Length: 274
Image (spheres, rainbow, N blue to C red):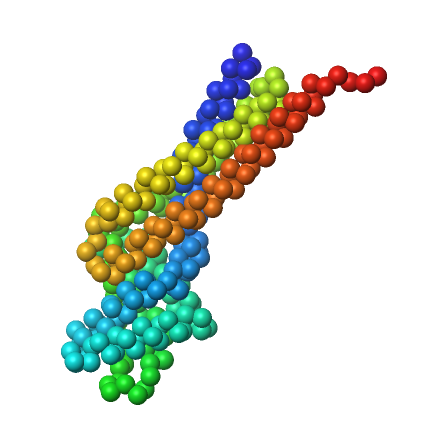
């Protein structure tokens, strides 16, 4: 009976881990404000994001009639050049992080309508460093907002917020099931090796899921905003890379458990010398 309990508990730990790992990632990298800001901060230096930001800023100036149509191209080029040369200056990444912090706070509060982000912190940083030799003078707009999601995306964030509770429950199930598997097993080294194989399988299953899900998520992006179409694939790719890093560590831990378990079994099977 004990071996059966150990096997069942090991399978429960594996199944719970497959569900819990992505939930835990979402909890720490999306639902948590500081975690999301850290996760998205690396996008600030991406050229595609910079170009999308400049395009949205120029659109704002054009709508406000601050830029004549004849000067739109040179001003756009100047803004892109400034954005690219200031990515390493103190304040640029901080401006992007403030933008993302404001987005997170507005996204998870009660509200309706599409998800929008204020680009004013970045607009202030870049506009203040424009070459004053431009034929026109540009003032920082009072507000620059860009749509990055639909009203349906806002509704889905309720489930994202719940990931913090579900991931903790899932982690508890994984730990309890793994402990039961070790305690109930006749050979604990073999049980440890089995749990290690479960960890390796978890990493493999989730890696395959990432390969399938990333193109699907990108293709199904509903937003028609040019800024959102530029940013969403970057966020999805960054999320896939970050979760993959987690899976590498899980696989390494699983491999170590297998090795230790096999070695422990071999050592326990040796006859003792009198």
